[in-house]
Length: 331
Image 1 (tube, helix red, strand yellow):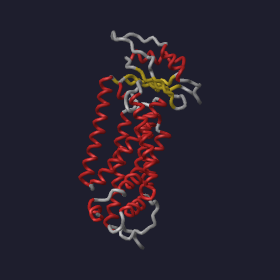
Image 2 (tube, one colour; image 1 turned 180 degrees about the vertical axis):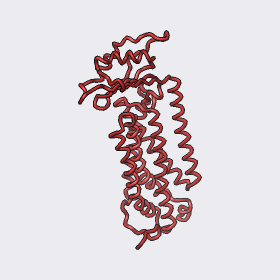
Image 3 (cartoon, helix red, strand yellow; image 1 turned 45 degrees about the vertical axis):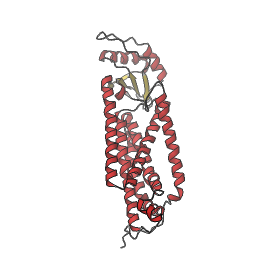
């Protein structure tokens, strides 16, 4: 039985990356440009004013989710009808506070219209119940056990936003410090470039979704970004480790050849790893319900983009950046 080691690995190249690096850069550049455009559009939108449309977790307010009681399929219901009914509701005055305005309430219909999700300013328990009772003739009947009312105060929402940003900053700083100390500075820099590439594209997609469909990001999205960061760096480091092996074995060959051989050796592993990671995420998207739907979408998008940057973008950039010793030898 013969075993293949890095020293005697002479399998044909599956993916001659360096000869196609301009196409790789073009794909990434277009994706980054569109993503940055979406982020800027969201930031300059007067109704949003942030790179992404913030959800209830970050802004504070009340979310009411109602499950409609339907035997087979629910009657047709439109968000316009629900919004019109909300504007007619007379909320009870409680605790002497000013009545919240429901004109800007956001309405979503999920699960083929079986679930109604309302996002509005912070309501008291009595006011939330008044909203449910007022919507019963229009959207009901509702399942008795399928009603949920969640209220987050503005101060708590701001605290969650700050905590999420701090956790992302700490995680990215820790990753940057580790790979800078552990690896060649070139590898560290390009791993961070790949990480930024992945995060910007995922955020850009959700920025466009926020502009077009009104999708809001919540604390689960911050968790998804942290997970994507770890996955992206891990995948990139694996590819760079194989490139480092090829440099030790094929030191007399051009860097582009070393990169091509390393990428070809890790291509199958990356495809298998990404595929097995995507399988449970697809299951969550299809069967996980509305709560985990966009969380799974963000993770799946991050896996795809992270695999692309690890196996294509970062190595192709490394292939044009020789080490100092190689540059000195050629001088």
